[in-house]
Image (cartoon, rainbow, N blue to C red; front, side):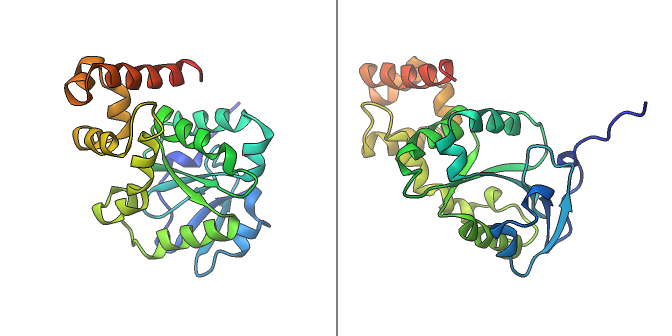
Length: 215
């Protein structure tokens, strides 16, 4: 028996102006609202939902996924572990029904998995964002461009402020010393103590390691 081909996630990015889309999205409102983009449907994307020409892969987490329980976390872990050369982005529906769960989803995606998260109001919002990423950013990955980091600038300090004992000032101080949330997560108590003091350092270190141990 011939071996199965590798998932398309490991192949080249689609041509400029095109999106490779998982077959399961064919009749969705998201695809129907995706204007000015050529769509290539594919059965072999495995975990990712969309591949963009700027070498970004997109996974979509819906309101139903979040409300249904923790099974979406397994999908996110598989997505993170796929080992592709694409920049991995997670679009998460933040709606009236899912809003109460949203902080926990943020912590898991950004703190525990180290992925980029962008909230969307629904599939129509997501289609507009994907179209902007395809056309507005050209061939370069927007998440590797300084000018496009504004998408995450407001989100990251807000996430850091969810750590017990960390307010706005401490969050900004920490992010000046650590260039990413992942670096902050990996910091030792001694490194943290020199920046925020012993008590806060222990709280921050315990927060990250309890979060990871519980996943």
